[in-house]
Amino acid sequence: MKIKHSLLFLMFVTIGCKKPYSPPVITSSPSYLVVEGVINAGSDSTIIALSHTIKLSSGNAINPVLGATVTVQNDQNTSFPLTEASKGKYASPGLNLDNAHKYRLNIHTPDGKQYQSAFEAVTITPPIDSIGFTMQNTSAGTGIQLYVNTHDASNSVKYYRWDYAETWKFHAMYSSEYITDGTAIVGRTQDQMTYTCYKSDTSSTIVLGSSAKLSQNIIYQSPLTQIASISEKIETEYSILVNQYALSADAYNFWVNLKTNTEQLGGIFDAQPSQISGNITCVTNPSESVVGYISVSTVQHKRIFISNMQLPDSWRPAYPYQCELDSVWFHPKSDPTFNEVAAELIPINSELIPVYAFYDGGPNPIGYLSSYIDCTDCTIRGSKTPPPFWK
Image 1: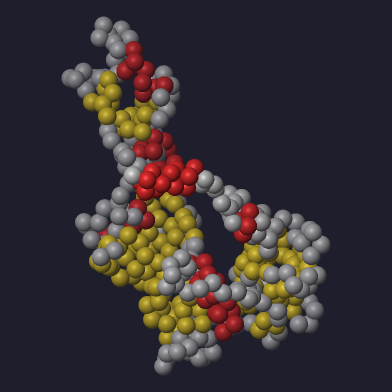
Image 2: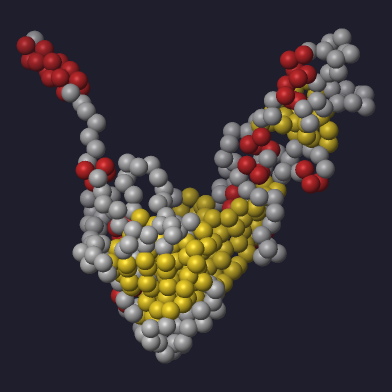
């Protein structure tokens, strides 16, 4: 009995003494400059994003650097200015750089610090040969695997990075044929329909490829991203725009280390964290760490569309909300069976949307099948306006 009492006492003491612990790295981590982007040597825009790292405890997603002075400089001391196009993003129209020179990025931040990337030669990115997909049926589920193919006939490029932008056409769960102005329910006009929308997203993972260890300088079916068969992305029509960047060996190693440290850690058998060394230094304080690698290259683009007609008929999207239809009676107040609560429910409650009307032999509806706005209005998650490139 004494042992049991001792164990109980120890349990109460242990539970009672629990205190939240915040490691110093969470609450007092230093703020480093993060530089993202590529000096585009061709006719496309150069866009550089500047931000500072943030404390894990801050709850913020990004901390952009505002009011910086950013220029591209060549080895002949000629500079090309970038302007702040949006918060923390600095851009220039096509620079059309001379491939015979090397280039670097200069950054002056409002706190008086100066940063420079190392001079880099221009790398010519070969075209994307094709983008395609394969259908998968594995233990992890069904869906499609998108891939990219490329090669370099000049045999000078062996390292690649890709990012992409996705756009898809999708539907609300129900097509609402009616709308309320607060006092009455009327049929929707075509402009008021909220059934079909478009949504876009950009890649959030690091996608790399290398032919350095291959017998031929060919990248074949290098994976880009996977889409589950229940995703609304492939419910109707899907498009992906892939951007391809040629990398030097040093740039490739930087991105491999960054991918390892940000996407492939967590288990005891995963790769251990390593220091990420880029090609950017703080001129005013050389001991300060900077996150980023600025390459100088042309960029290649390719877009494809995938229709649901190309996919199995059995694939159906899983709607993100619990959606049900419920009947709501609606009688005019002159009707002796008028129920005030039911009659006022649809016009006043903006979350409940009439979908279909039902009748009882007369010319006017006696009620509606209704659902909530999340299930009837696609603009909650997208835009009714198709993007300019949509077919």
